Amino acid sequence: MKEEQFEMLNKAITKHEETSQMYLEYWKLYSHMGTWQFWVIFVCLFALPLIVLYFTIDREKIFLIGFYGFNINVWLTFVANIGTGIGWWDYPYMLIPIISTGFSVNSAFVPVLFMLVYQWTLNNKKNFYFYSLLTAIILTFVLDPLLVSFDFLTFSKEFNYFLLLLIYTSIFLFSKLITSIFVYMQKTKNKQPSA
Image 1 (cartoon, one colour):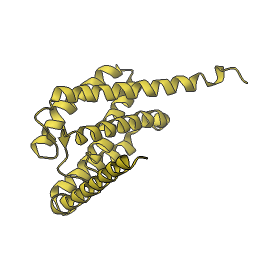
Image 2: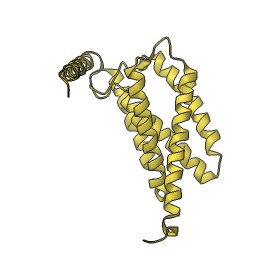
Image 3: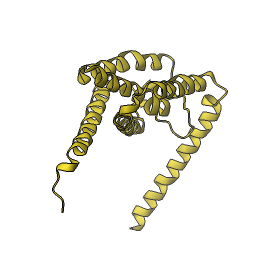
Image 4: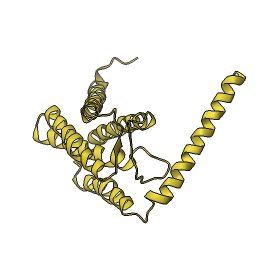
């Protein structure tokens, strides 16, 4: 590694450490366990969805539904990191001090909601795409404006709700595609010629 590259990397690491420390200090002042916002995030957006999922998930399809939900979580977290990093949005109240990417919403509430919709469409032979799009619309134009109104989520002026709808839609479509590919590979495992 060249010296110039090494110096620049060290500066970036130092800035990252300073930013993490600043988020920790911010959390201690404004988002700690003694605030009502922390408990709304913890109870309503994190714990409650996971409890509901535990009691309602179809145990016969648990790996399929769980795999789909894990995909939603991964891609949503990935996009949330990008959006936060470039300043499109931010989460003023955090469950975990150094994770400023809406951990409770992106790792519990939204994935669980999409998982339950996926399960419902499977069990009732309903159109997955229609009901998932409807879920994305409700998230975009009901839940997220509600989060914004209570300052749990902030958007930059350049960002808009239509772009958010495209993000949710892309994530559920991509997650379904990956899930379908894995299901197909599982179904065809015995049809491959042996070596």
